[in-house]
View (cartoon, rainbow, N blue to C red):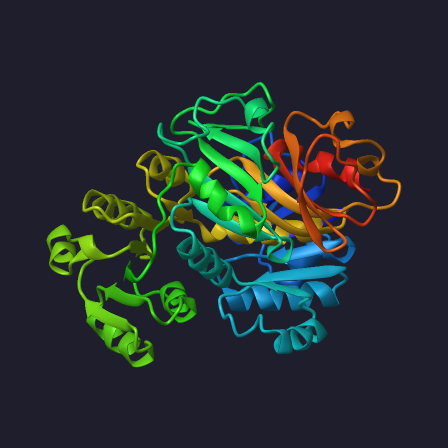
Length: 444
């Protein structure tokens, strides 16, 4: 498959690196040649070129492209590039946009006629993840899979957690209400087996069903927390989207540094949102605004360092739940070590959403884990595929891949070794980044 990616920023580069591991024919183009400094061990062809130039698109072979992806920071460039690419012969086009109005179902058909087959809005996806984080504030990350019938929840365990110091084989003796699909330990992500022991400060990734989410909270040693008061710093579009999508009973303080912007936000904000003009980096100011009495703190300024430090301050004042938008990927590891709760990165979210369009198997969803070198995918088992031929324990799955759960005839089930996957089952697969290409061998 030939894939052309226009835009060598963090989204485009991250996506190109993922796809290079799939042995795809990848071309990464950018108008700025300095952005094309890709490590030599990635099999990616780079070319300096303007994605809205017909001549440059022809030079990179857009006529023979299976997929053209435009993920530059400029929405108008992405839309124009996709329209040109489709009319010059690209089979399918995907554009990154910032206007969430474009992704409304009623507008998608209009853009498809113009040559833009799919639209991805990172801010909308980030909003969803933040709102989900407020539903289960004791967790680090929360994803609804298979239409909400299966849940992937991530939590850091302390020494008081019932699962600490237990082997996975001990846990599997109990009723199968959850499956630990991965362990993040330090800088390493482990796909665990029965002989692996859970240690204090491990970050565990559980798959479960909605009715057993509270059991996961108990196993992780977490307290129930109800969110009624939230402080947000940074009056960004994401911040306003989050305020709009949270339940109306939640009282929100939104702190914005710009006085002019504060007035504009106040005109749009709902009755449960108080806009405050001030500097969210100022600890004394946050104390005066009674930060210590809020249930959650969300840092959404344009500066990753500001968001990290603000969350550290909030934690030191006793705020139980913190969320930080960290757009500099290099800072994510540091933020995790500082025990910041939920980390949001629009670039990784966008790349994972696009990634699902590029796999040959019947994939309905793919998520790249922000805090782990891993992905979770939802796939449909095809008739006579390798995954359907034997019980799970006899499939000899690679060590960097595991099955978390499945949907069979509309019913969610947690995977165990004796289970046989049936053709048509929708299966949740968790794997390290290096193993995504192996999934297709089992499901095709």
